[in-house]
Image (cartoon, rainbow, N blue to C red):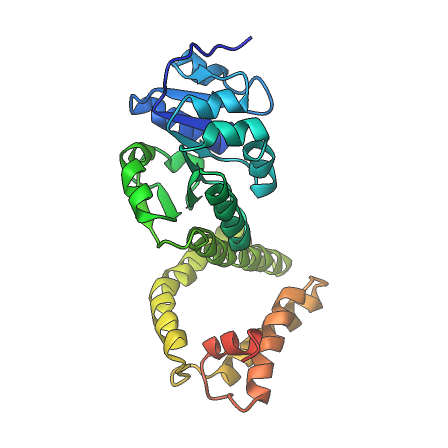
Length: 296
């Protein structure tokens, strides 16, 4: 039986995984009337105890509010909810902000679907973990019609942190998300590999960590420098030509494999760098790899 009373809400949250529950809690903390729905029952107990209204169906949920925030695992999951005929009909004239994660092409496809069915649509990405939601540390990216973003910005602001509108193309938020996740996961892969190599040489993770943080501190200014270098196509190697970089990469490979540690990731990185050298760009900087991997 539905706990819904028929009253209107300021916002509906569809998807009550860890992040979805945190989003709903932030809306409640801000004093906003909030309706919630999740495919798997039982995840709304804490929220309803705090005043959220539980909808019995997704169509009931989206009909309760002018704004629906969707946060599910991917766009297969969001499509499975939003593209049900009854839900699509209930959404007509209302706004969906999809904070689920997926690739840019899926964001464009969903925006096109929404336009065909009279659904107002914004895409988005959450760039920080659940503990940051509702705090100054949260980071949200949005893309789609600016007018629509500005209309709903006061409600979205209840989620805390910074909200950045990246442009009218609905896929822009997903494009940033993918690129930033690329940085994060390759960094995590590198760090866990480093921990394995260090352990094989009798160095504990705790001993390595302070020096690893020093390496991380070098990166922010390099990100800015390398971005400008790549955008301009200059690829300066004046301070560290890629020929020198290849040598250090080979050291990592050899040290790893001497201990039977899989060095396939570094072998890929070394191989890309050697392709740059083979093309006659050995005096360039490492960012010349961007041309190689995109086939330029």
